Amino acid sequence: MMELPLSHSPSSLLLISFSIFILCCLKLASATCHLDDESGLLGFRSGITEDPSGMLVSWKPGTDCCTWPGINCLFKDRVTSISLYGQPDKPNSFLSGRISPSLSKLRSLDGIYLQDLRNISGPFPNLLFGLPNLQFIYIQNSKLSGPIPDNIGKMTRLGSLSLAGNRFTGKIPSSISELTQLGQLNLGGNLLTGEIPDGIRRLKNLTLLNLERNQLSGGVPDFFSSFTDLRVLSLSHNKLSGKIPATISSLAPKLAYLELGHNALIGKIPDFLGTFKALDTLDLSWNRFSGVVPKSFGNLTKIFNLDLSNNFLVDPFPEMYVKGIESLDLSNNGFHLDVIPKWVTSSPIIYSLKLAGCGIKMKLDDWKPSQTYFYDYIDLSGNQVSGSPIELLNRTDYLVGFWASGNGLRFNMESLRIVKTLKDLDLSRNLVFGKVPQAISGLQKFNVSHNHLCGRIPATDFPASAFLGNDCLCGSPLAPCKVYK
Image (cartoon, rainbow, N blue to C red; front, top):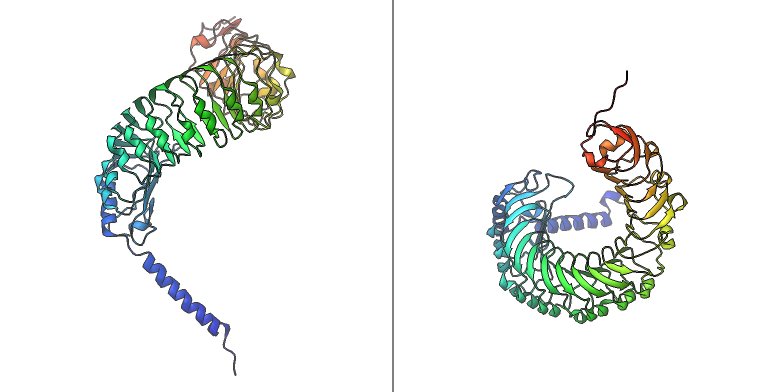
């Protein structure tokens, strides 16, 4: 019996039949989206007045809306999510307009993600109350305004609610306590006032609670024993007062981010914070904390970002045993460190070091950090640092800001390599000599006042105050240079 060619063998015929079956199924699965969904999305598009990047240009009648950018259909022909994202680094990637009530036609919608669109305005979109399957709301970084509705608690299916970066005003509704399925609650970056509702203690599934950058007042609630999975707690940049409550200690096993900076908190930093062994970031800056930093901080071996700046903390600062630190700010307390700590010098990953007014008395030439390549920010202002920063700064490729005013640095400024990334340089009130290099024209902020510089000032827009008090600088914005015959 003659053997069939490979292309016509029984196995290949079976494969062809199976492929045809799969293609038919895929065709059925990708049928044109439901007419109500198409109508609802086109209504949303009609509410958009500006779309400079053409984000919605392919949203056209008669085409399959399940294939439109930002649209997902995971349940037959029904739209299940809308995901539209602006790009902060691209000025034209935004939308202007309002959220059309026509979206209420999308009955299978379970998620709406409108993030970084910047110019979406209007009140909280009440159409969301009419979507029976809605579980995820992320409408972030735009211009929604007015109060958050008092009946927000009716949306009991919600697993995530983020209205961050808008202009919502008024109090956080007490009914928010009814959203007991929430895993994330993010209302940061608005204009909310009043106290944090005590009913939030009922939201026991929270992994993230972010209320930062509002105008909230009163104390930090003492209800954190309710939360067993909280990993992010950010209440920074508000008007909160009082002490850190004791129940925050119950978050020790899992909390990775604790941000309470820029408030009016008082008292000593609790010893129990040293038990937060999963902590990545701790920000207690710009409060009124006093006393010493607990020795227990030596147990924070995984911490990468520590900001205790602008408090009333005093010596001694505890020895830390971190494997690496990314950013450290101890500025403007009552510390007398004498030298930059060894655990900072040995860090292989540090990019931001701010130790302004920390009683450092050392010659900068003697400081040999393990790495300088990744440094973005260095602030040593108001210390007793001498020597030259040339060896340090000329080994940085990504430096954005260097502040060292009010020290005893002595070096020739013409030897300084000013990298393209550098935006802010303050060397005022030191012993710097030489000429001002032309490369400063690329900076945004600059100050070399009260040094020993000479020569003609390069053409810049910096004010006279940036150059005053030197030996013989001349030219705009100072007096004209003398011309000798």
